[in-house]
Image (cartoon, rainbow, N blue to C red; front, top):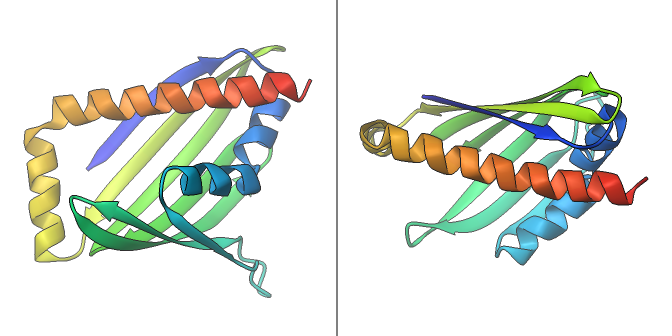
Length: 154
């Protein structure tokens, strides 16, 4: 299952990418929302940083592993993750529209690997329109946060 959303941000692409790749701030933001986040060091083989995050989902404690797969400044960040029988992927692409305006496109994929994860994805498919709307709202909120941080960095 895949979700896609795009938002325009009133800031130059390099500042948006800097705000997007400020992992310390992202970790603190996740912790403020109740997640327990731990960053693992960058691998000796050149692999990007990895995180372990614990959070509550539908009354259950879930532990997720997230890795940075690819970083191509100032245009692309790609992540992969595993949580509760689900493999996930997220790609964030930035496109400059003008010198002070950037379009952010976010793609998220869910791939169930267990029966319970398949049931969850099936229920999400039944509510696809509502889930797509929620995803778009979250991306818009995130874009607004990035815009504020990018403008403060000016």
